[in-house]
Length: 258
Image (cartoon, rainbow, N blue to C red; front, side, top):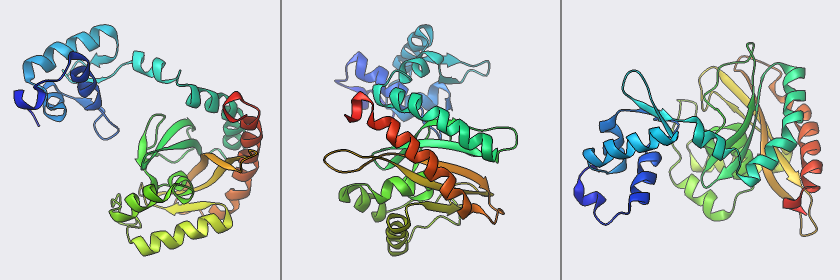
């Protein structure tokens, strides 16, 4: 990817955006050479752009010389209208579920073939998870993702079923089996996973549905992550469904869904 040819004809803005796009959930901290390689930008140009982005606050240079996303981008991201309104409406309900269960509770929306996590509440007693606010995880390997995938357009479903990634040895990657799982999610109204994204963790998730004159819309997915050895995972679904209905009713009153 690296080299002048790859960057030929690109504007300064597109090069800067390419540098920022080099960072993702799997690569939260990168060295100068790694950013150059992943963004396809010459080393000298990358060095200059990194310095400018760090000075503005979009990136932070660590003591080990690597770079990570800065607070400025985080602050701007929180202003995104859909996510901001959704987070404000949903946060009290997530807190209620977490208070009752002491487990990690999160809210996600679909972004292409990924589940974008827009809110999360966890505590010291919660099982460690890979999801964080801003994480984008595979739809087919997470509870919230399966809920969102079950209501996704056909083209998205076909894209995911074509070549689902194997995140752990327990991830369901067989297209036929995954299709049957999604049909079951639609039938019963909730999804579950067992160590498909993280070993030692299981999850349950339900859709957040908003009733509209044109028909119901799945606006998000609400999920909870618990230790994989828990035997009462399915009993968490009704708890989540109560909270999801509350979020859905509150969203129906917002400007976005009127």
